[in-house]
Image 1 (cartoon, one colour):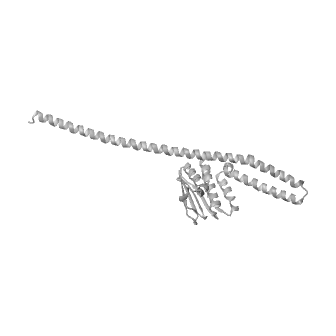
Image 2 (cartoon, one colour):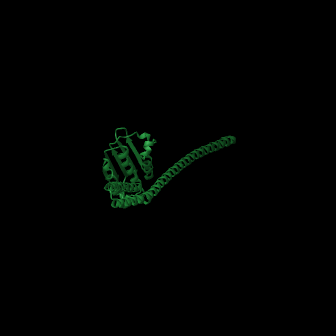
Length: 263
């Protein structure tokens, strides 16, 4: 028969073991809860950072659009009006002068003013979404492409009509990206052919643009040349859409730009 002191010792031993187990479990639970809280905090901070970046991009793009609208109004209301008035004045002169030479010069001046006025109108349409608002996305993009025929650039355009059902914000962002692609292929790449496809399905929106121009080095996107090509603006609008813009190019080998926006 066990002695009373032995029984008491065994009880104390059991209590000690149980206490250690409880403490060990408590420590494990504390560590797990702490790690979960830390992970949740990291996720929350990351989401806040993403939300902040998205709001900054949205503010930047909104500011750019507001500035474009202001410039377009100034060009239309002031420069356009002044050119129209000057052309009317020159037209009046050519009918009042007696000298055929002066009349011919007046006609030439009127033609120059008319061409300049037309250029101003095109600039206004490019920097403001007038075409987009008036004709819709597909027709507006087609008009932009047609205007580049005179530069020697042939554009093979294929746009899914489903893009017309996207939000106005998404359409404007896509429209600006397409504008930059058209200008870059014509002006900077000096391309002769540009293939531009925009497709929309249940899974994603995909925009691909491939030209046969001079190409460039994509990792030099912080250079003045890249800035002039509007790459930062395209990246910002891709981010606004929640998509990823990928640029593949090398000197002498043309350029391929892909925009993928999951839906």
